[in-house]
Image (cartoon, rainbow, N blue to C red):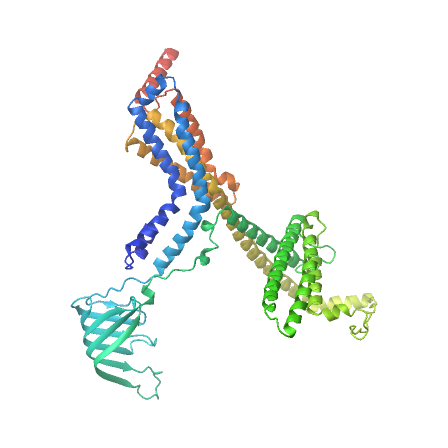
Length: 566
């Protein structure tokens, strides 16, 4: 919230709005804050037990450290499951409301606050200056510049006093001015031969101006505008986004192969540029799914039309509705057969182009049933036109003298230099086109990797609770310090390390340097050995944080050197 501090405060909003925003922020940062909370609480709890020798009493009664950690470990395990469910279902919805409310607060104009002796420009198209305010309603010595015509300071209002009163739920404000003048000057082209512009001055004893204060109200933006953001999607939504991005990348790559062939006429004369098999198969699958969606939408449209036509039950309308119903049922049966064909796309023999042509023919037959029933009627048959057969052009053979003359014309006319210039320009154009396509694909792939990061974060942030417990609980038993001193310091250190490793792994994934899962789980994989190490040392009652441990080790090392080299 500190990042938007200047934009969200001073807007004259109710206290409940700010509390709502703070509540949303609290839930939004829970995936990052929950592991820190587990680390700090486990450090304080077992540090307290060790400081008061309660862990020693537990061990002396025959209960091992792992058995003492088991109940809280089970609780942390279920807490991690709850964190995953929260990350997948609750946090996306809260993020949607957070983005919407934060955007609405930022777009809201500041509260109406006219100060003495200062021009106030908060009301659109007006600049108001009040030299003295008796209270929140009564004003004295008022100056108003009217910029509503967009031509500068051509309108000005001076008044001795006035009253400022909002009404209609603070949506409008009435400014009543007393004993003043209204000056207005026309704006001309200022040409040499132009006549002087008009200037008018109007005296008034009372003048009322109504200002629209809609920009000062908090208008809620529809939540549909944020539907494409990664932070508001759960795992199912992220999978759909990944599939859409993969289809878009495949579509661009497939079209690049098809369009590039026309750019190399000499190469494509003998050889063809065909897309790889995996790209063609993905294109075929995407086309089949797109065709299936089109069929489903058409079926819904026909159902809606059938319901509308069934309302007409008198006269010929009933017959028309019956005919449409029969036609729709016939078409539904045909479309059902198309769906069965579409379901066989996984066996490799499915052709989406044939499906589309078949669907078009079916729709034409349904729209014009007379044409399909009159196959044997010669009067309704389509007219036939004579087919012109293209004759084979004989290949010309030039004599050596003719070829020498043509070569001399090419050299004399400087055609080689022109051809080289044209080829160079074409090469530059191709290079620019390829660079633009490559940049477009690179941006889509980067967005694809960001979706993968958001997907794996649902799991890794929940698993981080278990990792932090494995670090905090044994470490608290080793340092044997409770309270808010040493545990807070150690928690902050480990959390900073955890945060830095998380950011580093995500950056590697965004740049495409590592696998998305390994990059997202990089912080957990690096801190998990620390947890296992501290757990092993806690079982042995090691004194890692006591100075005597290291001083004794240094003394032993010095004595060994003396005995070795003396």
